[in-house]
Image (cartoon, rainbow, N blue to C red; front, side, top):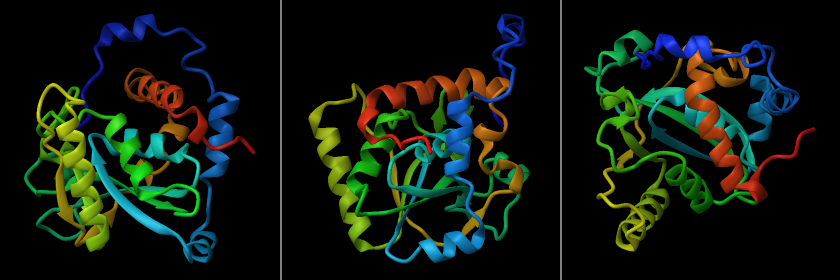
Length: 223
């Protein structure tokens, strides 16, 4: 389960924090509202990346704002049972990772740039942990769809590790994508639908702000 935000934080929140989503968030929400039919029509010429970087709510929120990304879905992969539920995955005993499946236009954003955002927006050196979210379901992981993605991921990880960008070794796993299962409906588009919730306010929002600052030139334009 997601880490529980200290109760004392509730008293620090102003009415504005718990108000409706900002106009910017509403604009991003509209960008990511695609019907299944629209998505299927758009998939021609698109590619897919599947990444785990802690809570899938965080990963989804970040990549929804990246230019060239057409759709992001939260889901589970890398485990041992079929059709796992969120409750089962949260036990850490199914082997699944919480992931975001990212459908993107390679003519606008490359797989290399996807990996750049991935490594920049989480800590790839903490084993089975991101912040207070602890367990194998929160592992840093790249689930490759083909041999090319595998080689790209291995090359990027090796170069990043050799660069000394992090004080500790990178523990990101590179795993083949096998069975993937979409998460329950209430997990989808979570930040945009629940931006006033404490986890969104104190965990996802700061991560988004750092992402927006670091990748100003790669953000979607509001419609």
